[in-house]
Image 1 (cartoon, helix red, strand yellow):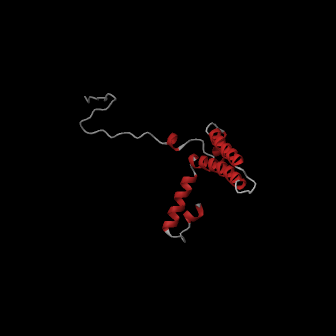
Image 2: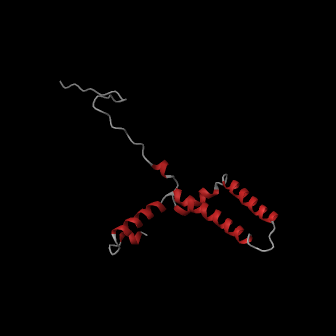
Image 3: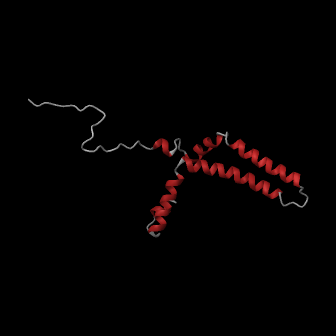
Length: 122
């Protein structure tokens, strides 16, 4: 993606989109979603492959669905996915933690919260 973003032979729209994708991939949130989706989708694919078998009865299907529900519930308290996302992205902080706190501009008739220093010239 970095190569596409820097290559002038591509259209500006494609370069800009590649630059945006690189920026999105460099976030811990994106790494976490990749780890989570990979784990969930792999589990659902495994169970989906078992469902169309001709020898399945309704109890087996109910057990498969119950196991999926239990799997999703255990993911809520699974904190090793965050560690895997940090390893994948090499980033330790979420975007919100890294943002600076914006400072509001004061109007001319507002006073600041800090006392002003008055300096007299003699």
